[in-house]
Every structure is written in structure tokens, then in C-alpha cells.
Image (cartoon, rainbow, N blue to C red; front, side):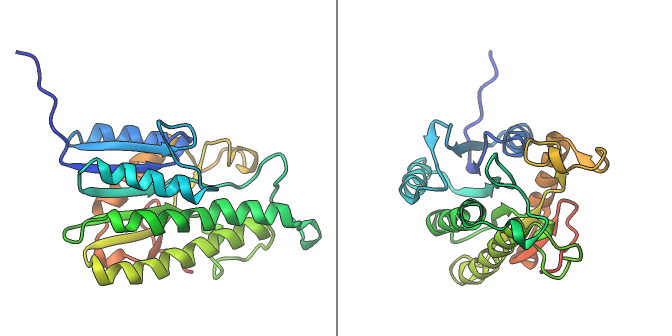
Length: 236
């Protein structure tokens, strides 16, 4: 007799699953939790989700709901630090509106629209997780170097969205956990130009292992918090 494939009992959703961290997290969840179906969403996935299009976010949420499985984890593994047209600013003289618009739309507004449409999919009873990848530089308290105006501010805005959403979420889903997570410096296209000599740089696989452990161990006492990949609390 051949091995029978187990029937999934829950659904893990990874948004931004085509990116380095997102794809590594998808592989980690598939390996660690064979009882869970992993659904990857993004601009290039079978079920399209574009953070710049609320309609695509709403449609993707409807597709997730149609699976008929309880959603145990939603991880938003998206973000933008730089492109050909967007670069971290060293001084306020380098600020420009198009770059700020891009940073806020992709790092804060897009994830907030995901919360709008996906948080209602979490079960009303039992533990569930909603997590967004943030960044330590989004901490206002921890900002001692300055610079990177747009990226810092957009991640700080994301943190505020997450904190506020966690409060509302607790009223209808008291066991749901809402987390902002700094994944560390990971060897990706996003961070490569700004990694200093490769020191303390995680591979996507190592990052995924740490994120899996963090999400698996998180509980309601952590909801509304901002943590790094080792579950050390980061000040707002």
C-alpha cells in the first residue's frame, strides 16, 4: 500500500510567498506541519494578490475563505526598502514625494488593507496568528542614527496599524495573536546593498526556521507586540 496523503485540518496563508523570506517560510511550514495546507499569495501566484489593489486583496481573501478550512496562520512577508527609483535617504534633502508614496503604499497601506479583508477569516475560537514583517528601524525609540526617513516612517506606520488592529481583533477573537516581527538582516535582494560585510546576516532558510519557532510559541500575551526573530521585544 502506498502512503496516503493526510487531509489538511487548517490553512496557513503566506502573502508575499514569491519573495526570499516568504518562499522559505512556505517551505518550512510545509515541512513542519504536514497537516496544514499552505496557500501562497502574491502578484505572481495562482491566486493573485497585489498590495496596490484592494480589489485583488478582497478577491484573494474570498478565495481563502472558499477553501473551507480554519485559518491558523496568516503571514504578510512583504516590504520595500529600495528600487531603481526609491533609495534610503541620508538627509531630508533627498526626500521626494513619489518615493514616500511607494514606501507607504507597500509597507503600510497595503498590509493594512490585508488586515481589513483577512483578519475576519481568523476563527472566533482557538489560537490563530496574524503576523507582518516589520523592521527594527521602524522603532521610534530605537532610532539613534537618523536617515532612512521614508522606510522608517512607513514601518512605524505599519507597527501602529498592527497595534491598533490587535486591540479590535481581541474583542471578537480573544485567542488570536497579532504580531509585528523584525526578521533580522536576511540575505535578500532587499537587504544586500545595505548588509555590512555579511556580518549577522541570516539565510532565508535560517530566518524561516526562527520565524516558524516564534509563531508556533507565540500566545495571547504577545498580541499587539513588536518582536525580533528571537522573540526579543522591540520598543515602539
